[in-house]
Length: 251
Image: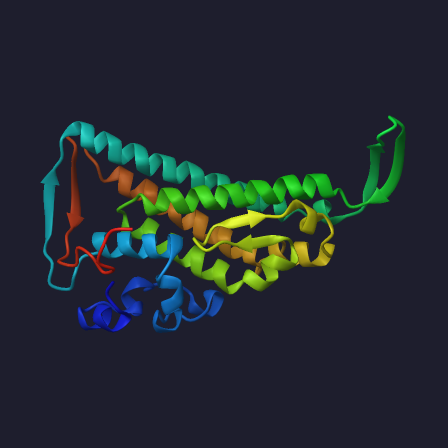
């Protein structure tokens, strides 16, 4: 596997990868401090795919004609990525609702069949919504890793970076970041979490959820834009670089 130093010497820098992003909102864009993250999981897959699709500084732009079946398959993948990212955006909007974190009259049925009513947070609904978010996040990462559009890959890579940096806060809500940078929800831990820890993750304009929503929107925009470059003849314009593999063997 190539090292960070070899990536830089080959002409790639973190500025190229994360150009145009708001570093005040999402943190430092330096890859040198994230070497461990590059070594495993979805982040590695995303970065490998990104550098395969991104052009080198001396690469020339050219237009290739694809077999229509190949073009159709590529457009379908972009459409799937766009749809999945939209689902992620919707799941975050649900978790951003203030009413979700307010106490309500909850009716429960005991093992003996008797119903009781108590005032509490609706943890069943909160858990359902958090799990929907985690599922949409994981699917978005998987779909993005299967893409060769640089905009999709760049924003998905940023999602995994932001998630990694928020691992401690996610853990307070019963959400763990797995070794392959996916999200896993522990229902038991979530239902016993401090409601304020859960709310602070997803509610508010500067929350983790807000950052995920922004990146999901960017992925959708990039996927739609790439899809629209195709013509009825199955042609597209793309830049091809000389860096076929940054990490060596395929992931």
